[in-house]
Length: 346
Length: 240
Image 1: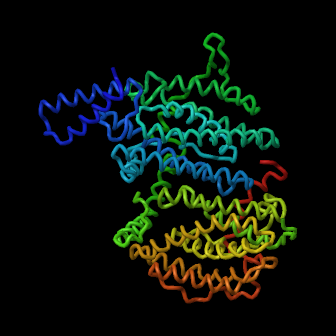
Image 2 (image 1 turned 180 degrees about the horizontal axis):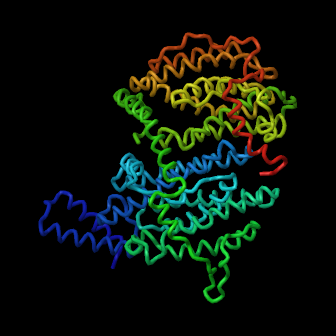
Image 3 (image 1 turned 180 degrees about the vertical axis):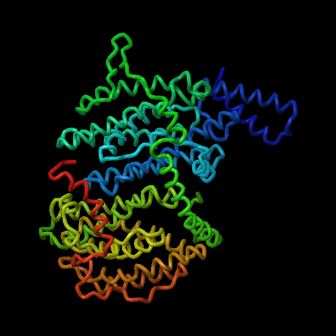
């Protein structure tokens, strides 16, 4: 039976193992024992913590997923920051600035969560900048009008929440805890986006048209945010077994569609899918086919903004190098006297 | 409870300072040199925007004042409208302005005028802005040779916009000469600790007509306003 005690045994074994010799039969046996204890702990819904033994592949999967999530937060600042300087009222400007700031904050928690797995921010940013790690493809679409800020809040943050709420129960403790806070803030953003669109939808005919146009453009890419269909998803099965992931892509996508349909009606906006209708038998909405060719194409780098987003990110990083170097040099000079107050080098 | 009526011109002057600097800091979003500074600069921008909304509302409708006035009707200091430049320029602008704003708000908070409630709250925010600017001035000035050179250049470039801060604003009861000498001493102290040289040039431009407080601005300000106001102005009478 998996209990906290067995997991603790794995921890103890793992710590003892650090002092052992490599490559002996005893190590092989130990590894098998750690794995059994780890699997049992995960099966019992216990949280895995940074110092616990964990399989290399579990660690690698988490680093990949957390990094991709962190990258999405910081790249995701760009399409919205695009409208900060043009926000049409001071109230909206304050809300948007606070939102973009929250995203930077989410990036910080998430890079810290990845750091607990032994991979630092510098290394992850380098992988982002060189295209070896990805961010959510949704941010490769442009924000063309003010209504896009609302559509991102309502649909993109809405889809993100649907994806992320189950992550609050993810087996890896630091990630799960970061997600609790992130989800609270995201749900605030989602309501703000909805409220922005509502004001437009009920505003002048031009404002209404702006809102409808934004929903037309963001709806399908939002559905793609849940990833490829279950039978084509490369990482899903193992992640589900490890309780990193709790629901399949298609389940979450369906949940999102079911949530959005009545909200779109309240907004007085139409979702751009002629096949969208309630299915009595399934007790879910049926929806039309997703253009997966576009999804894979954007993922491969051929979206409208892939080049622009990564170029801006790299430029900010490169142009900031002298600032980070100055902070490190200052901290090094003053660390002995305790007068320095360094910033993290990343 | 104070019954003093609000001097509109003073509310506009202080409100425009906060509005314009908040806008400039908002331009950093997505471009900051380190993630911590994305958070910090946005935080300062939000504090300033909050102050601007209170101050402009004392003078009228915040959105009409922000979005429908022409450039010549804005009375912010020229310092706050200066383009961000590199991070050193932004920090020098922050150092000069937050030191001034901290001194002014401390005086307004202590007095019993119409700005006392706002100033009492804002002075705490601005103390943080000032600390942030001072810490970065130290790091950049006393960091690497390259950062020292950039910070020195930024301090020199913006120096000539600092004299305007201490021209008395009608309706604000403050010891302007006293604030000015405290400012010169405080900023000089930070610069020296940062191994920088206190600029020696004039602290005001040679233009008898005046400067920002008289509605006379620098060329980049018009483009900043064009960007800020265009959407609002494109939909006259719309609510957002």
